[in-house]
Image (tube, rainbow, N blue to C red; front, side, top):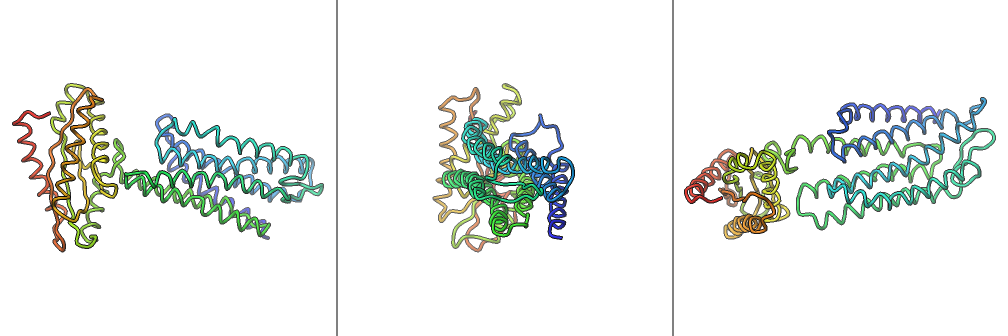
Length: 385
């Protein structure tokens, strides 16, 4: 009876993964980012794991011509797909955390070494009891060296954990730190499944645990698409409004809440003179400038074409104005490097909320917006670029 339940669980997992694929991974693969492609491949590998697991239960003890050979082949595929899934997770984490195809490419040889070792172990096991064995009666069983296989799979999870923790310690952007936290969650459910399944033979829950983890990743990806600006990757207006509602109600001690409204000077001129691609690059460079200038925990959002907001908390007004100075300094540094054909400057307005002071989001925005436009008029009058 237990094998029927295992098959049913596998089938449910396959259905969930297929639904995720049709809702997420069915668009044109040529128009998708590397992380989306890796995630889609993981969906299919997980489907392969659940399918081979179900077939192993169906074939176990079956008697027909070629049944044992088929069982051995399917078991071998199952054993190869497991570390392949773990390897894909490492590559996925690496890209999500660094957004660098080059760094991911450098990881591939390192990740392939355990895979090659697993492939050798699996081939050996097809002919002699080593990691697994299918006896003359066509019954599958784990062998003494199964623990080596488990440790190799855990190595991938540990390696991904090290990558995530390294980025978490050095990353300045809060959004990336949030992403790191949810990436660290993925191995939890499969790892629990490995432990339980290693102790209690006959229970098959490792890769349904992976389905749960992929669901968590899927929901996070969907949420990120809804709340992120597609051009820059920072928060969008929807995320900003929900963040401000929370922040107005939840303040840290006696700190002052500030909001900067930032608008790129002469942005239309950049578009007209250099083209819209340069205009997009100007927006991206502005985000990089803001990330460098503000504190790690500060909130950055793009709320319009060339309009940005920065929200944070400081103990004094002086610290808030020091942050404005830091932003201006970063714009100046950017222009001095002459890394781009265009120069950048910005007009900055601000609104400060003191302890126990309450204002609506619209009132805070209006106050910062007014000061920003006053500064913009001065910049235009002075001919600043």
